[in-house]
Image 1 (cartoon, rainbow, N blue to C red):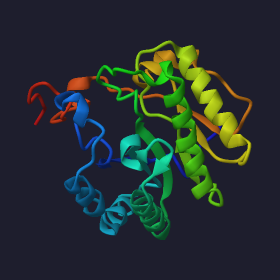
Image 2 (image 1 turned 60 degrees about the vertical axis):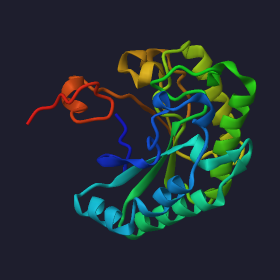
Image 3 (image 1 turned 180 degrees about the vertical axis):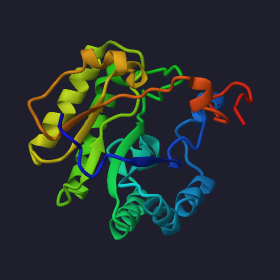
Image 4 (image 1 turned 180 degrees about the horizontal axis):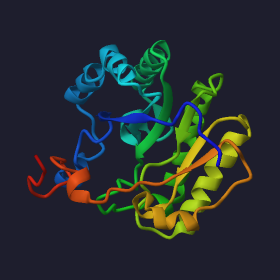
Length: 234
């Protein structure tokens, strides 16, 4: 078994550039809007002190989730201000000896826990925007192959071949300019371990496969916003 050196014990940062809005409680016409308050949140929520503390805990990497609506101002147009926050985050991590996973946490059309009017894997334009977004990241961080890209967090319960097709399109697009970028790919049904068997396997040592497990859910999500009642253990 090969080891993913430098990415063996880490933690994720949520609530900064992702998961700061619950789409299921917002009207449809407000779901893709960002406000002044959102931008203030992005500028202040995570600081270098947080990264320093994570390093002091003995972690070797940080998984940074971001939402497509945070990065993408409009189709194929990206917010430089948000990329600036990510640039600073990367500098902080490097200063404190932490590796980095950049994770597209919520893609337009795949907001994992709600129904979408237009599903990512059923819409050619959304799929093209998905690939273009990752190519933008590759262009920006092309010179730094220590940064891993996790293509999409928790693909919904969809036909695995539809996801395999989009993942393959994205991998091939990135590989045209960078054969060494570490790419992390999970399967469908919210990265369910039993769905790994449906995931396309590549003859590529720089592709890493991932799964999520939450059992028992009541324990792993205690006090979480995903709990429908305040169920937790003391």
